[in-house]
Amino acid sequence: MIDVPFAHVPMLNPDLVDEAPASVAVRTLSWQGALTVGTLGISAPRTKMSPSGGFDDATVQSIEQLTDHLVDALSMSASPLLERVASIVELFGIDPARFGDLSERTRPSA
Image 1 (cartoon, helix red, strand yellow):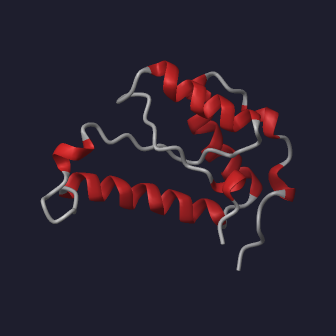
Image 2 (tube, rainbow, N blue to C red):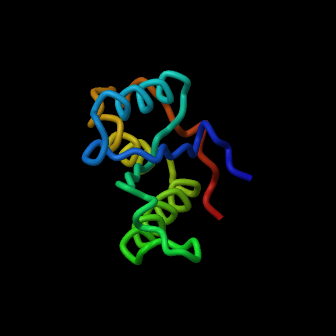
């Protein structure tokens, strides 16, 4: 089971969408306590779908990479997790210090 506020990954990439919607989404989620650990923008998704419903290879690879980021974040300790979050939220002018000590929000490594 995934804790959505901990592992939320908005499907936005500031390079592919207007800055305002991406910024609003990440800011709102951050204000609510979500740790954004990755973003993904798929421009013109309908044109990238095959008639059978699959996506082109580049889109599939981008989705796989985002999934890897999410899975990795679930087992990260506090410091690397904060670094990952900072690499995303700082792009939107959010100070990652607002999330405080993440050690209480992380899961022990197996």
